[in-house]
Length: 166
Image (cartoon, rainbow, N blue to C red; front, side):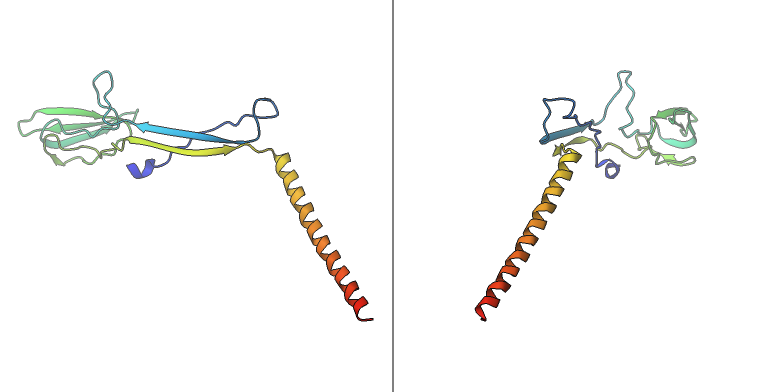
């Protein structure tokens, strides 16, 4: 389960320097951190959906139903005929199927507990498209000037070489 949750995506709305005079076209550091809890319990005492649920008793799984909300109800009958039902939270992948024999406290679902803390440091660069186009125009003009200077130098060298031959 941890392989599918390796990346967090944060939507960022950049300020507009044209509308706010305090914002400049610069590079701004950006720090992000995320904490996924481990073994959470709701105030009502029920386990959250980041826990492994164990079988409440040993026996045979006789019925597995899914509610409209996506919760799964697993019904287990033990050797004495006592029936218990357990409700598992939405989004959990079951390890058992109807007809399986389970032991007490055997996991009924895959353990999604991939909690922990992660952080990342990056930076956001505010750029104006007019500034980028201006920079590109400046680079093109600089390149053109350099080429023309080289051509003029070659022309001057040819004139000097021709004068030396006379």
